[in-house]
Image (cartoon, rainbow, N blue to C red; front, side):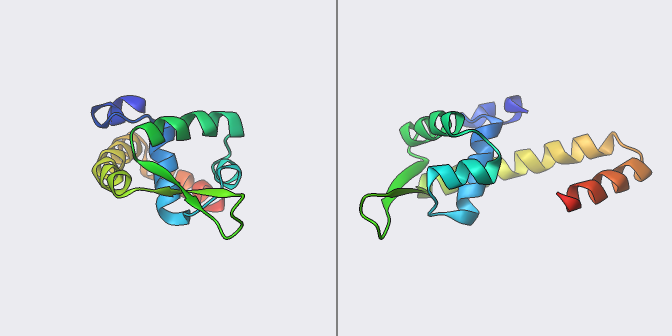
Amino acid sequence: MDAIFAPLGLTAPQFSILNLLAGNAPIRISDLADLSGTDRTTMTRNIGILMRLKLVKHVAEEDKRARALDITKTGNARLREALPLWEAQQKRTVSRLSQTDSEILLRILSTI
């Protein structure tokens, strides 16, 4: 899956992080890790890369001692570029399934 995002300089996990941030920011890194089902160490490493790329930034919370994450304008633009690539890959994957298998998959996915 990483190969489809390579032209944009992203990996699949980084795409997922941008997608989650777009809908949940501002959010603390530990909450983002929980939301994504990723351990905090892996999340921190990916966030560091996304920050160096200026796709993610820290923002202050009401509690000045805490910091949250937000997606930048550049991050939103990169996400908009990546979404059609992800959608095309999803269509290719589903097209390999029979109609029955596709319906079963969608039913399973809707429960998680």
